[in-house]
Length: 61
Image (tube, rainbow, N blue to C red; front, top):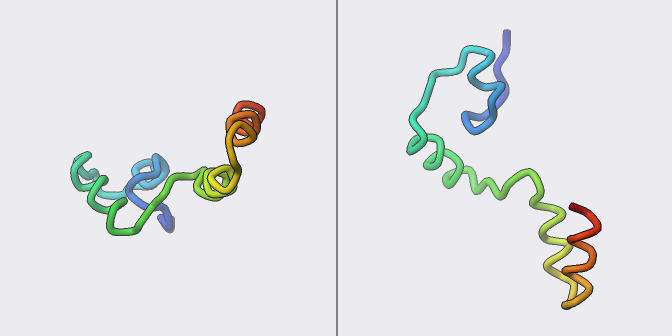
């Protein structure tokens, strides 16, 4: 079975990926410039002025 997941994703291990230490996972995430699964949403909110930013954020999450 192919394992196309990165080490920061739980399915990476479920599909038999090499078990890494938290330090290795963090290092891999930094090298890949991973910004989190909400990266696009955070960037949209960042463009808004307060208090609109906070209001939209509360509604979304």
